[in-house]
Length: 136
Image 1 (cartoon, rainbow, N blue to C red):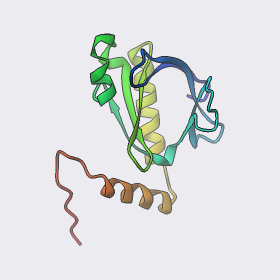
Image 2 (image 1 turned 90 degrees about the vertical axis):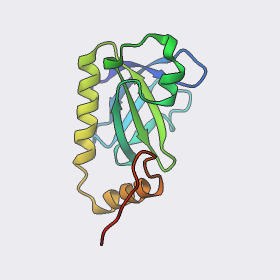
Image 3 (image 1 turned 45 degrees about the vertical axis):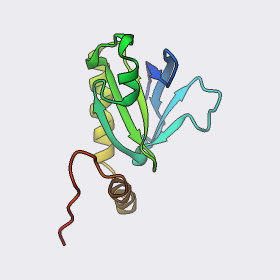
Image 4 (image 1 turned 120 degrees about the vertical axis):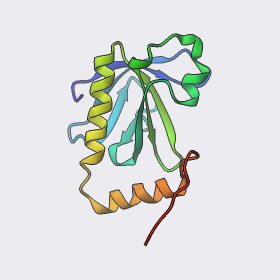
């Protein structure tokens, strides 16, 4: 993951952009290039809320005619407003590597403040499918 993988980055209204995605040397940020907005071309690992497999996001549903193999697709939900980064790899093994690797890095956060912040964000934007119940 640190050496990088070429993937298609899907955006609203476009066919997709081929970019090189990689982890920074500290494994704290996902970055991509080329980008005209190099400072914005990154996602902090501890800002990732979840990683989903397949074509589940709104953008993938809009790109239905793209014909992407679902096993090569995944979405990274991140940030305070649950933004999505929708990616397509060239083969299922690469997708599996990134999905597993990102989930591993997310679980490896040992800083309690970052973990608490992620939980607050999760509670602020609860899932539509199930109610959030907090028992104290």
